Amino acid sequence: MILIFPVKAQVLNVGNNEQWFNQWCWAGCSKTILDYYGFVTPQQCDIAEWVRTTATFHNFGSVNCCVNASLGCNYWNYNYGYAGSIQDILVHFGGLQNSGIARSLTMAEITTEMQNNRLFVIRWGWSTGGGHFVVGHGISFSYIYFMNPWFGEGFKVGLYSYMLSGVGGGTTATHTWTHTNRITSIVTADNDLSNEKAISAYPNPFFSETTIHSDKNLNDATMVVYNAFGQEVKQIENINGQSVAFHRDNLPTGLYFIRLTQDNQVIMNDRLIIAD
Image 1 (cartoon, helix red, strand yellow):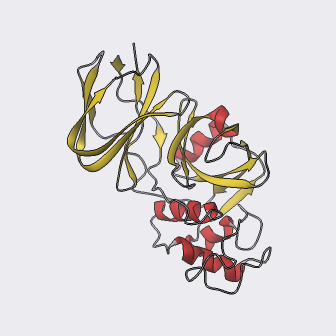
Image 2: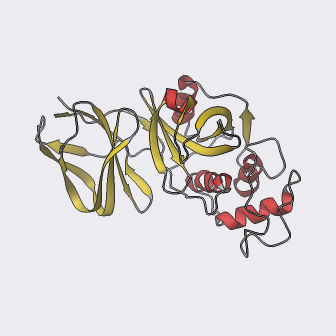
């Protein structure tokens, strides 16, 4: 194996916000965006409660969403264009101006968004009907980094072609990238990239085992390894200290990505591994 460090990716360091209820992907995505830009944000149920009192496209019920979300509050939402949509949520809680377009972004457009510290919301339409929201937060070569709020999904990386159309993301249905919500405010963030941190691997090249060392002290961190198709192939949990042993095990020759997370935050964005 040959381990290559570093790979210059443009990946914004977002938090993972798993949706509280099965229709609240919009609440999880909204909170991730507001958190990233440093706003003091309420919980998902508080976001939903504001939507309950604002939305006109649906009756979200008369019961406070933080008291009992099952009495009307657990309902889908729009990306933009309707009162109480994600667009309105970002403006109300963070003053983040944003605009929607009824198409996917090109890879060049995604690169521009990342260079300007701007997250974006992807709307996937399911082949079986309905839709789902994920937050785009990075690009490296032909790979897109995104936070999927669906239960047990979280931080993911997928080929651009997969983002446009594919199977997965918490369902067996085929998804299609149909709409995008883009931040248009001029924004800054202090937690954008962790790619510049000192990361080393020794020995290099290696055939069975190497040690990955970080300049950041780790506390119950998790390392996830993805293959070139964005599929998780290995996970190492409860990492402490500054080093972790990486065993090849049965991984075939190929291209791999590593992501190191701690306290639900990405502390080392993916690097490339080439097995030789």
